[in-house]
Image (cartoon, rainbow, N blue to C red; front, side, top):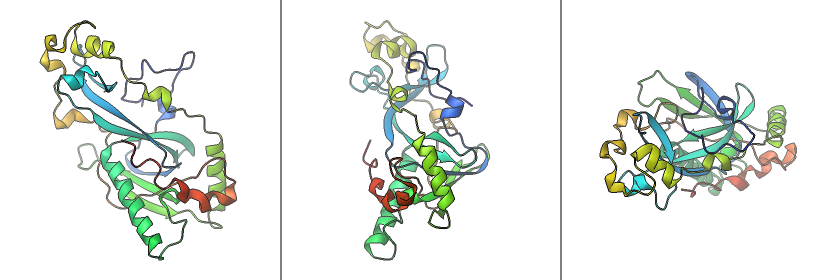
Length: 258
């Protein structure tokens, strides 16, 4: 399955983006992943109809965004790198504010345990697997997120070493995927007006916020967590033996990145 997002204008010249390979797309049932770190990226996105009546995602350019001027406020979405345990490949996980809030809550819980001395310094989000369950279409929530097994030496030494190799080979670049639509493109392809026209001349139906049932597609929405969530693998520059000891350094690196 390709990404629901329209990345037409963000492909590096001469290089095709394989969305099926790049993005983590949960299957129905249990999916196990591990976060590479908490150094994610955030972006603002609209989900609106284009001039052909098709719902599309539009990354907001921020200042001067014609859709914001027209009254359509974008939602914040997030990217994190994960290791998909089914394929043992590095992927990008895209999710919304509910999952971000969950991560913040669990980071806080583990931080409190460490502060009270009832857990060790390596008991941090990046040292757990996550269990993401995808339910039947139409279920609410569609996804539930749980805390899986903590990765520890020496029991999980081989997994930790394998994860390090995967991270060392990481060549994923977020930046091409974060490029927003231009003001001109939004006017022409979404509002159906010329680049130089005023917003008031656009048909209102083109930029009204869709109903809740279609505001966030199933693939892109990850509902509120059911249990705890933590996960992951530390920086690739670290030797395998030091991965667990230094994972806490990325414990809170992205949580304020709205």
